[in-house]
Amino acid sequence: MQRVSSANEEAIDAWNGVLFDRFLQYRDILVTGLGAHSDRALQEVPPRSGDRVLDIGCGFGDTTQQLAGLVGDEGAALGVDAAPRFIELARAEAEQAGVGNVRFEVADVEITELERGFDYAFGRMGTMFFANPVAAHRNVRRALEPGGRLCTVVWRRKLDNEWLYRAEQVVEEFVTEPEESDEPTCGPGPFALADADTTSQILLSAGFTDVALRRCDLPIRIGRDLDQAVELVMALGPAGEVIRLAGEEAERIRPEIEAAVRGVLCEFEGPDGVVSTASSWIVTATAAA
Ligand SMILES: C[S@@+](CC[C@H](N)C(=O)[O-])C[C@H]1O[C@@H](n2cnc3c(N)ncnc32)[C@H](O)[C@@H]1O
Image 1: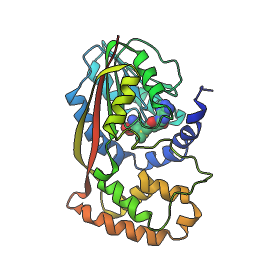
Image 2: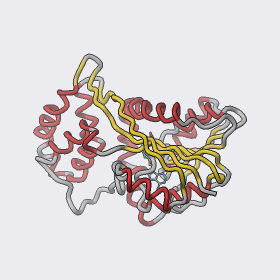
Image 3: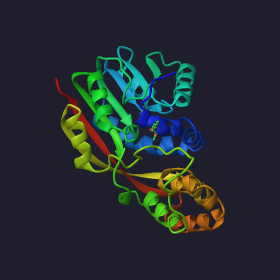
Image 4: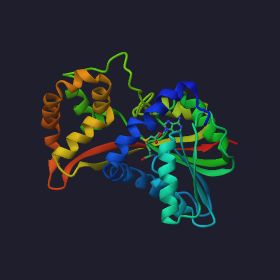
């Protein structure tokens, strides 16, 4: 059994359970959409050939395989994630793809003693869910060599991610997130690092220097058509979480909620499907000596 922080237990249950299932269901859309943001980050701040790299909250491990390709055979990539089901799948797929310089480990990044000696740590949308983000980032900093580089991609504020924001607003006209629920929540949530000052202070407190946040606005396709886009935002993200946590209360009026969400998302429908701007930060920092 892996050791997990008691404060992260509930979020890890969510990631290893219902959120894993939903990520798997919408994998193509998520990986393609988020991939545009991680590709931009990796173009701007690539690891060097021969680097040892760590992929934080690696999920399916697609970015870990990409990093392994970028560092080449002289380098290596380790993907870590607190959810064993993500790691099982990531391992199996890397093996099947015959990628030799990649490994995966189950780890709660906040408390697991990570291997040391990394030159570069990366994380696409994988660093916002820690109950104690300073402890988790400090742990990552310790795993880096002095002078090692951090590059993470995190959501910017909800307001600039209109498809998520407006869908949540409309869902909240019907139901709100209950104070108590039997369903596990995903911890501080996807927008926990959206505030630039908070995020830079977290990194400084964790022992990083040269902290910089660059805004990255790129369109992402949230559905090949309106049906799929509505399904996606009602299953994942802020609107999906309100519906999931509201449980029966939301299920009873699902058709009405769905019609209202459809009314918002149709504004983003075009010849390439349902497309909206997604806004993230590319966060970079250096591990202090
Ligand atoms: C939004 S998903 C992103 C996954 C992947 N990086 C991607 O972009 O497709 C967040 C990931 O962070 C992982 N995670 C959440 N809390 C974690 C923790 N304390 N330690 C390690 N991973 C964690 C989840 O299991 C999940 O795979």
